[in-house]
Amino acid sequence: MRTLLVANSDDVEKISRVAKDFGKVTKVADADAVVPSIEAAAEEGKRFDVLVLSDEVEEFTNILKMIEMFQEGRTLDEEKLKIIILTNTFHEQHTKKIVEAAEVVVRDFFVKPYIRTSVVRMLEAIELEQYQREIEKPELDMTILAVEDSPVTRRQLRILLRKLACVVTVESAEEMFEEISSINPDIITMDVGLPGITGIQACERLRNTPGYSDIPVIFITAREGRDDELAMFKAGSNDFVKKPFGSFALKARVKNQLLRRRAELELQKETEQLSKSVRKLDCLFSISDIIMDPNISTEELVNRVIKVIPAASVRPEAACARIILKEREFRTDNFKETIWQITAPIVTHEKPIGSLEVCFLDDEESLVGGVDSIISDIASRISQAIERRHYTETLKKLSITDGLTKLYNSRYFSLRIKEELSRAKRHKSFLSLLMLDVDHFKLFNDTYGHSEGDRILAKLASTIRKVIQETALAFRYGGDEFMIILPENNEDDAKKVVDRIRNEWSRVFEKDPPSISIGSSTYDGTTEITSGNLVREADKGMYASRGIKITNVVDIKQSVEGGQL
Image 1 (spheres, rainbow, N blue to C red):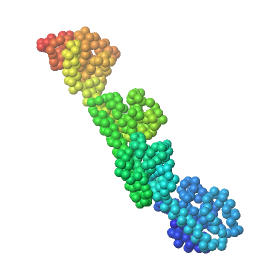
Image 2 (image 1 turned 90 degrees about the vertical axis):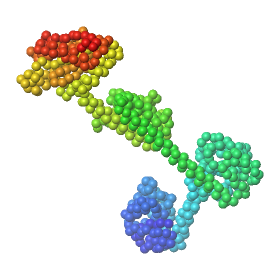
Image 3 (image 1 turned 45 degrees about the vertical axis):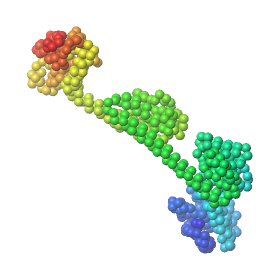
Image 4 (image 1 turned 135 degrees about the vertical axis):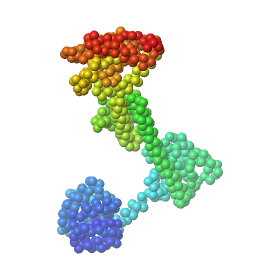
């Protein structure tokens, strides 16, 4: 027993000498040290059992107020801390009024002159109460349900088993089935010969009741026949105890089943936790596989991820998800906003671009432990994937784009002309190619400077972009040369494009625009030809028009005939 005393007088010193016989005594000099001492003991996982102070101590009222504050804050355990106040005949009534006003629970008042025997008896009573609490506390934090129609046997079971676990008794099997959900027992002891539903019948029914079929059952019986024993085990009992039973045999068998039950429950809990962790990892691995696939677009990535996310819940069918990216929204088919939801931002380049919302359609029990961190992790992975794709697309675009004109470069032209020609052959459709350059561009650069030459090339590229349709592809082929691929365009279509370029180019400059040369070639969809043939024919047409002003540009229109170019 631990005692805290405010040692401000000889009387308190006398009390401390008595208290030492009951355990450790801590003395503090004044009121200011009371609260810190209690807090220090609590931090060490210890509690004072008795607080002794005199009403003559300075700030006596303040000490009471602090104790009241601790009681309200549940820092001070009322049941364990017994307050004893030392007073005298003159102060007794006044002190009791102060204590009553402070609403502090006081165990007793000692009035001068203090009788040592009274103090000893008080401390003995407190010590006895502690002992009784300790011996009444069950060994296991589990529940035993005893089903017994005999009041004598019920009482005997309570007395013998209460030190082992909490014991709840009922009189019949019918009452057991009515109360079992509220009792939630870890083990059942049951008399075989119950009135109404017998113990054998109750056990058989219990084994077929979902949620309770695995609860251990120990029969208590006076029957000794072999057939009776077989009937009990056949009904599903785990063990049995014969009447009259000894305390050792009963407690040993019940404890054995309780320990097995506890081990099973702990294993079940660990298995469920492991299952949740595996489900979480499966979900994250699946999302990682999707995110790391370089061949899918951002839209396809989000659509596939959204279908995997519900797997992060205990019951995937009770979960739904939605991803919002700027103006677009992706959702599972069963999406519905509920009060049970978790939202995580999707951020790229340190700027929010959307959010991931996961909603649970029934209740928060559907959540996997730490599901908020899972959702945040998924949102982070989506953010990284979108950002990575943005970088990839940017790099890809830069690798096929000419820096000056912002048109596609010659490397990309070599790839696309083959693809477009192959497509035209498959569909037996027309394909035209235009090649153009600025006449005498080297002389222009030498005369006006390279910066002015770059300005002319940029203007020509802008003119081309403005004139061609969305299906057409424009390239800077090299130096001052440009290429335009015109899918599904015949000779006349190509001529119209040439005319539009000519007219637009003439409007770019107020007077005397630099002349350009344009050549064209066309595949009619029926002959055998290579991309090199198309390029060479367009090149010939361009050089044939060399030196002629834009207003008189020559369009060499020659249909491609198989094998003759």
